[in-house]
Image (cartoon, rainbow, N blue to C red; front, side, top):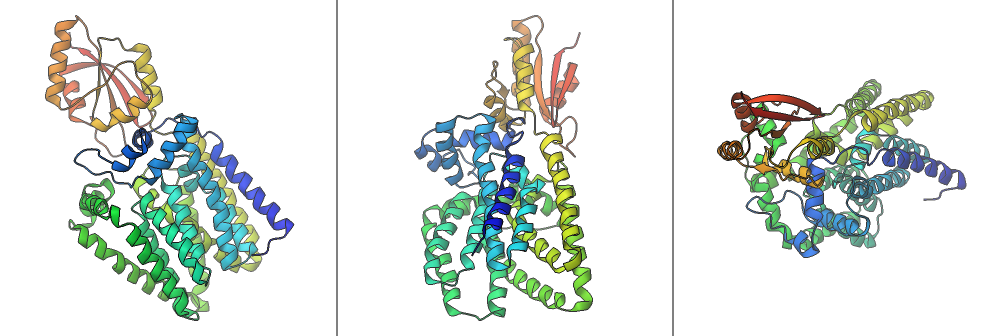
Length: 462
């Protein structure tokens, strides 16, 4: 891939824009639940991280990301900026990887448009400022796709390494590789059908799975609890999907791959017909624009986590379609860039995360040592503890709360009970059995909002 001085300067400009948007404001938002879990699971020795002995329920992510973050925290601390920095850095790298992939597949113009759109993508920026593994998995997908663009025997080694790293980073690698492989197979079938390329793909896939065997049982254990994951629960409830076993989930992967092969082949055939090409192009571009505007909306995080894994490839398709518009391409690309920048600024500056920092700070300032701080559900103790509260939180069922309040009344004349209640969209109010009991039996004195949280102070009824 030959690049002249002008190409390098343009790419550098795009990377600088990407860096500015990802590092600005990176430490301003509070650590929320998932990020606090990342910090918790990354603490301690590497042996502890890889053991993943967290009780009866298995951890739903493999240990490699936590291992890397643990090493990083040992060097740079565990502030909001520090723990999010690796994600921001990889997110910027992804922009360069997409440019490289687009140059391999198409040309400099498409590569520059794609890299620019990813640099200002509100979805990619959001997860580039989150201490989770999602942009790392995006990098794995881009690297794997890049390996497939070389028709060489030696590609077997980097492709095997990339896939193996991806398997130990997150369980979604199997889904990502299924989608990428299906699209690649259509391209391979419609091309020269070189046996070498097919053997490299098969060999690298098999080798990576063999290297993953030590962790395979833990993966099966996670599949066994997939039906309890919130996103799957919603899909099952709304679409009437039956509860699936681990074997059935695994069977879905080749079926998904086959469906994508058929879908891509049909789309390609339809797109080649002039009477449909224009309509399909504008429908896809309009859909992309609507999604870009939708991303700053603080909802549907489960769906967004899946979309971010494939978003560079969707952007690559969009850049290719824009390039086909010929006379209008610069204007359309400029509009898309402008909309993306506005949506990105909204996501960065206007959309907060659950403000555990603010809620904990108020408790540290106002709560007395004899007060009771109650958390429900139990896992909210993780983000609460991240901000080093002065009063340890109590957790448990309503019976325990009743017992604590009775003990507190005996101990002091007036006791405050503080509860950090969740105020997620579509959640009922009160949002927990504990809050419901307090509303019925204690007097609410004040309620302070902290984005999707509410700090509520109760006192005994007169």
